Image (tube, rainbow, N blue to C red; front, top):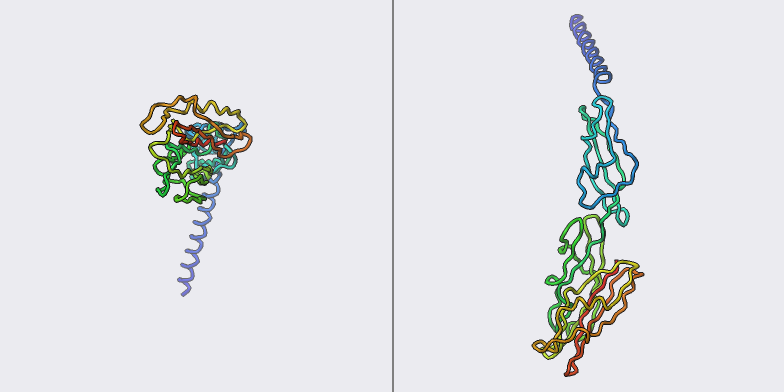
Length: 276
């Protein structure tokens, strides 16, 4: 019995000594000090297409054992927008002992703008016809590319059985969480082949906030006009252009192109001007 106690004591001492050795080795020999990421403090301005190398500009990383490990800095994540053109970027770096540290800073995009729409056909539909967007409205984002599939209808009150103009509200959101609203005017008309026609190269365009807008410049968008569907061409200067684009306030504004033919039949098509 006494021999068993002796064996237990010896084993306990051996284990204790081994623990102390491992503890000391871990504390005194192994590297537990994380590396450091140092920033030069300069404002980081980059394109939305910036490479990881460009996103790491102004950073360096050092480790007390491995020395300069700047080339090991990785871009972990870029946040959603936190301002009109800024985001937060998070970095990490690991040393040879798998210690790591992180660092975050703001980045500012030099060429970012909100998602934008394109309209290839006018929002004119015959009475009792189907109002559709998929064949004419698209959305593009400088970061995500084509985001047409993300366009969502937010409000609509359209009666396709009654001629008139009806508001339609939409929105699209990119991967950064930035949402672009759009207000369109849907025209329900009983246009026939006897009515005049006006064709534009595009039916939606953009104007910068605070810029000056001359409606006459939109005359250049006319690419065709006829007295009727199969009739002679119309002088573009005879087409009336009306509307009010308030560039002091963001939003969607209608500019109308109108013409009355020899049969006293009128036609008008809307160009949507988005102030952004």
